[in-house]
Image 1: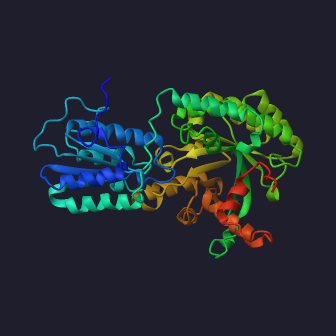
Image 2: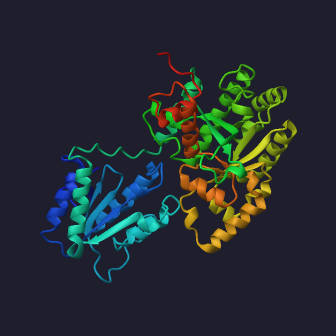
Image 3: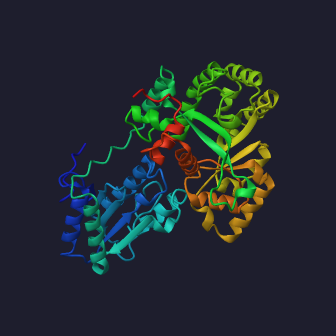
Length: 455
């Protein structure tokens, strides 16, 4: 394989190494100012992706497209510390024919077309796809491009930026998934588990400044982020949705065993314990619901008089309709609730997930919801009305805007980090030992299952 050449002198290579990518970008901008005619700069603002973006697959796709375009147009690619990627290259000649070797079926004969391509690819993850890229023709906008490069240098503190982590090969997520499952199946499982409350906002308090929140349920799960942190492999477990489903299938038996064993112990995993009768919610795959381990847990729930909620993703339910029908029957016989998880607003617009007859449906919040076109807003309102607002939970409610939008639609059930922050602030005000505690610390402690370390 041909060895890479220094990005300072060779086109079509990534600009990394001495000085950090921000400083290299600024130097390249200054050199381009000597002969800006026919040159352009394109910035992919991956830093603008909604949390927790940019994910590893965003970076891999963007880098592949930009590297391919750079090779065709005498260019360089700079991967910056804030997540943005910059392409500095020659503009396509007027009337140039489409590339003979398109990348993934995309004809990128004009580098400026990359922004439209990326907007299409990231439209689900970016609130406003028009913000995905900025294009500067250097002959006209050299000052703006140079100012952008200078801002990135200042932002990095003129320090060496750490190199971008290498893209994971096809086998790496497999290794990570296996390692995560092995850790979760081992001792000290509580260290890798978390809980999050779903809450109800009473109708009479919707306009109240205090916004009192009543516990509705507590979702118990393995913290994938904590497991990934143990392996120093952030984002790898969810890099492949099929491998992630395989991981869920491996974790489910351990979760079922832990909950069944903890029933009646009074601990954090006791299905009968919890704040003011907030029943547990558990994410499970269909094979797990149809397993003997689930039958054991269901018997414990009946004995404790607990109507636990079992969350099944919409993708899982649609992937095997026959197994879903059997699982729904098992839950009904056990007196447990069926919760349909992972429902996007697009799914509500394109399908009718309410026909699966869930007891609750968890609609994923998206920052795009307040700005939907009028026709889509009406269609979404009609879909929520068909399901019934009292059967819908607005999930991933990470901001105040999410709660405001939900209440404007008649929703009163919420789950997410903003809810966690409100609950933590209330605990701090009421706790006599909260001096010096921050809201973030209280949120993390409230999410933890393991007991606190001894001082």
